[in-house]
Image (cartoon, rainbow, N blue to C red; front, side):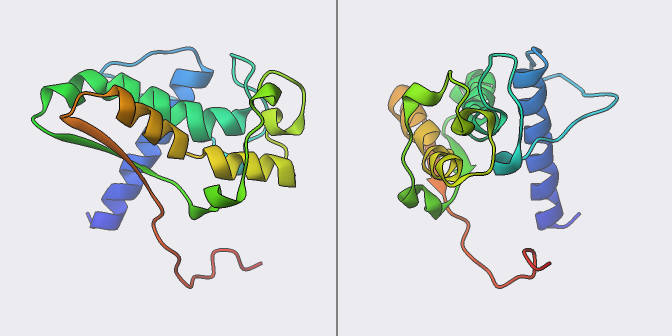
Length: 158
């Protein structure tokens, strides 16, 4: 299996765990196997709400990464040195988050595509999770948030 395919499989597995942990009320240990139907919820275009009434986009892009790190924390602490790397975006420089909107019916909460929602997504996407976790973890576990770079690809071509 190629390195890229291995990474994609790992990312897909992480998103499945995030989805089931946040949105199906399940909590997982390291021996879990997922069977049956799964739903993949991806970031900015995720509509709806979590069971905790947060917007799906906020849940997937922020709470999910935080939860996944917490679920793995015992294993991370056992290693001599562990790194948590959240792949994020440089777009966080464009945004701002109004935390008063998190429990309201405003568009930033339910994940509708609007400039306000995009700015909140761009700011909070993984960067805050990494900063928060880094300040709370023991010295053997560190958190990073990175932008993977930009490439010339036709992924956005219609």
